Structure formats: C-alpha cells, structure tokens
Image 1 (cartoon, rainbow, N blue to C red):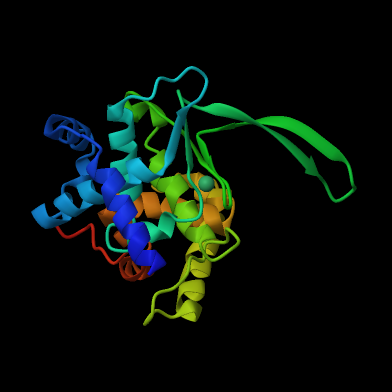
Image 2: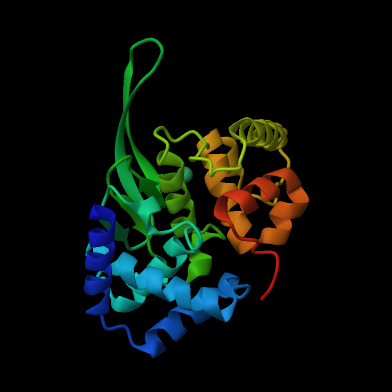
Length: 252
Ligand SMILES: [Zn+2]
C-alpha cells in the first residue's frame, strides 16, 4: 500500500515538472553512450529521470547555479544504471550536491600507530552512506578526463544498498553471490597487479584502490565503453549484464 502511494506521489510530483523536449534532446546529444537504447528504453529513461529530478533535493555548491540542463544531464546518467532496476534502488536518501568542477573534502584519518592525519582530499565526487551524493559538474565532459563522475558515484550508491561499500551490491534472484565475489575478486586482483606493475591500463587505475572503486570504475566502462570492459574482463561484463539487466554492447 505504502509502495503504491509512494509511486503515485512520485508520478504526481514528476507530472508537475515541465521539461521541454528540446532540453531532453540537448542533454541526450551530449551523452553518446545512450546510443544503444531502444526508443522504448529512451522514453523509460526520461520518465525515470523526470521522477528522479522531482524527488531528490538538489543544490549547487561553491556558487554553482543549478540549471535545468545540468539536472537533466545528471539525472539521465544517474538513471541509466537503474533503467531496468527501478528508482527504489536510490531510495533512502535525497540530497544531490553539485560542484563546479573538482572540490576538496577535509579528511581525518588515524593510522595504525594512532597518529591522526588531517588533509584536504581533492575529489570529483563522493557518495555518502544514507546521505547525499556529491558530484562535480563539467561544462565540457572531456574536462573530467574520461571519468564519468555521475555513473561512478551512483554505482557506489547501488553498492551501498547492501550496507558497506565493498563492491558487492544486492544480488537479484537467480544471481550467485559466490560467483559475483569470485569473478570480481579475480578481476580486481589482476587489475591491481597490472596497475602496481606500472601498466597503462585502459580502465581508470583508480579502480585498483579498493574493490568498491573497481566496481564503480568497471560500471563506468560498462555503460560508456562496453566493448572495452568486455574484452578486458569478460566475466565481469557477464555479471554486470545480469546485475544491471542491460547489455550496452548491443545496439538498438
Ligand atoms: Zn569512487
């Protein structure tokens, strides 16, 4: 009942949101990786993005003026991973904070000797467990250096859906958790070895930091450069196809 009501409320709010077709077209034109979607999927993605814009609380940081274009472009990318999962995967938190480019997060970390280190971490984004998603916005996507900040941070949100950010999101019925862990650990270990060995990897080397970063980086690749992920880590690609219920390597 509550679920039904929530769905109704969502649609009602979303219905009041006017997004002109030109705005969708313009935002989609800048996202070439949406090219594999069927016309039905495109319509569905717009609907999800519209609901997503309506139900999240958006704010611009450091003087960034949030425009409808920015919101639409972020929403389309954020909703691509959940196109066949549903908006409930992003339930339980509301804030989206958008920065004009990279930003600093003050950190306080205690090492094994009990010494506290304080420093400013220069980041492109961050997803907080049960809290907001912080993302940088680049007017020219190439300024982000090939990184898809939105897909990356929202992949973390999916990962956290099962609790800790550990590269293991909740599995669907019919998926094997054991198989996922085996495939992802093998790929992560291999990737870490390659990055540590100084190899110039086609995937973002940041993925070698932690299993959750590997999941986020590989998710970016899955949607942006599916053929690349498929040839680098075919088993990961297979698992992602099952998890995201999509195959971005197949064109409509
Ligand atoms: Zn990350």
